[in-house]
Length: 628
Image (cartoon, rainbow, N blue to C red):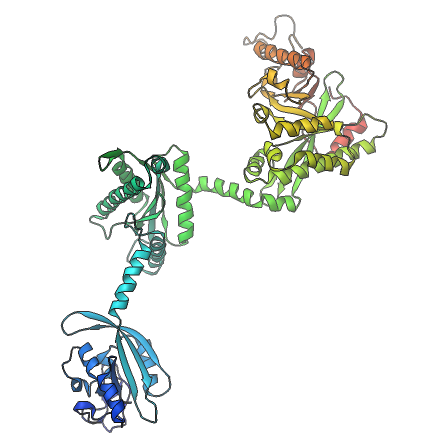
């Protein structure tokens, strides 16, 4: 069937090539006659060899074959193969690439051809064969065709692949096979017009499965996983009824499963599948007389295949599954691009936090702490801002929590402390003979746990030359109350060094003043929520009877008497404990007057100044104006 002949009357074969007319080539004979001249020993070896072989002439016709090849191809006699087209016997013309390579070997232009072919046996079964074609040596023309039956090897490889690609507990496709199918589904959707061009995914995990594993053991947990897999498969089969195919169900690991919907018709189809799964899992599982209940959280993603990758789809599904868990579990949640955009912004901030610290993208602004009695600036609080190259100037509430989560608060806090102390020392040197300002710096509890805060403070004070009494460290009440061990020891060491310790946002947590007496605290900062009720001085700017809150009385709201009683009590108790009190959130002169009357020592808020760059603080100090 292959090659060309030098005979005078070539006939075209079915591949458009020419072969010698039957009988025009060499005349093979039984018993190996017609073979190239071989020594008797080599002829016997060829005839009796367990490897199926044939000698093929340059025109592509079999010159001679051994009995092993005859049996492999379902012939009773070897000489029945003589004169046959070799390419037809082993299907070498099945694809153009192999056919071209075979012709090159016949012409002596290629050294060897190896390929795998699936051959049909006359009795109906198929077998896999490895075909090798090599030129004859010793000056003989033609090639040696050898055929090895590799059906058993292929079957073993198929079994091994099945084991490799399937989960042993549930017998479902595993993560590897799932991603292979998902990738193929996306590629197929882009290259064919037969389907919808869309893909859907339900990504779920079982709620509370770890507790079952921990309390009842992994054997029970495995039986539960297998039972869940059966119900998921049933849901998929029902969803695939009257459709082109059922969704693929896979176990991705642990208690995580996925249902892949190829050629999905839209969000509704995938959402219906997720709802069916939740319903199917509601009924208790009876495992050898043991009844167990389990629910699932499901992330649902459905989109057009164009512009989608397997990794991107799984990331969206994983994010949506997290939302379902956070929203209360035992539910399905649909992917929301807007919600994801917020998450991506958060992730972008997390990923650029540490590089931002290294690139010095953070800046400090300062807000005055003003003496309530005389309006003079006593100190400043250092407030960090992030001048992000993509998102602009960010306030602390956008990134401090993230920094605490990933630990970058430690290097950031160290930078804030060093920068604030250096600035405070500069103000001191620029104003010789004037009372120096103290600087207040916020400290996260993680800075105490994850770093040697005492050593950091001592080193920074030594580097900058700032006196310890001019540094105030602020920690939140919730972080301090109930703390023991290392944090308290660190705060005590700092206090012994001369550094002042302040509790920020006091009044929003435990407010345990008795406990405060045992802590090395010197300042309480009252949370601004208490100050908001101090809107007006009684009778300020009005005659008798004003400030009642009655419509028509000039629009003034009545003071909140409860707030004043609470604040006054806290101030008096703090003073008895030897603590000074700073009121946060002072916005009006009336608030300042009331706070001054009940004994607050210092105030902080927009009445005096917003947080400003250090040069604005320098201006305030130079003007030496009282901020009343």
